[in-house]
Image (tube, rainbow, N blue to C red; front, side, top):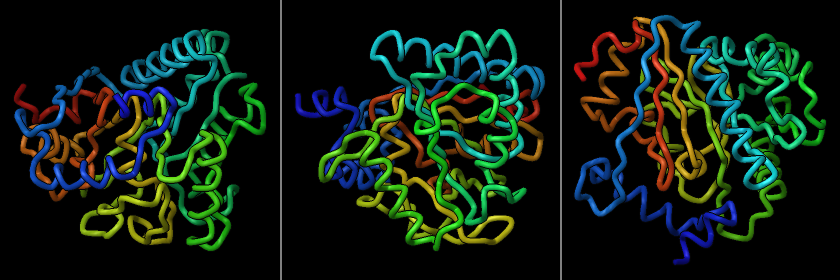
Length: 281
């Protein structure tokens, strides 16, 4: 089948995602919708620290498996306080010696349009937490160009994706794992409610404005995110319990995070007890 052939080549066509987004608007999460349905994995930990351990274990296991099978590992990270706990673990033993850093390519799902040394920079936080200590070849770390004009930065990062994944016209990359968070308003990456970026089917990266702080940002689009082999939400805190329930159980289609659903991969939720406190299953 063409889709399987393209997926094994680490890319998928854009026409596929035009059709996919149309199905999702009609409720493609439902069994019998014509799409392959796969229940998400929901893993609940007793504390944010234990959740970070699960995230670090998943990161390490996926990196080792991908390198052993294919020789490389492509991962995309998000910012925020929750993933930073996991990032700090990666550079500690025994994780550090188990992770195949030399065969890894690290990207970012979104970024504020600030310099990398700005406290608001997602890349800057990750660099402080583990990147600067990890033996990843410099050319395999791919920060978003937050210091550039937003539209130009989005174009440049898309060019980086095309080059790194050796994409042809009309193809999207396939990440091994994408790590995401969720805001209390249901946003994920820098995809915010009621913004046009949610309907993008052509571009891999777009410039947006919103969030807290309300600044210009770069973000990967849903076709890129949903093309990953595994998508992992990391969510902690009682203030996120309501939105977690709305996404997982209520199916609120107005929430950007509800639109995250891998087309041929695995969706995993790593939650702490507080974030999962309103779930009934």
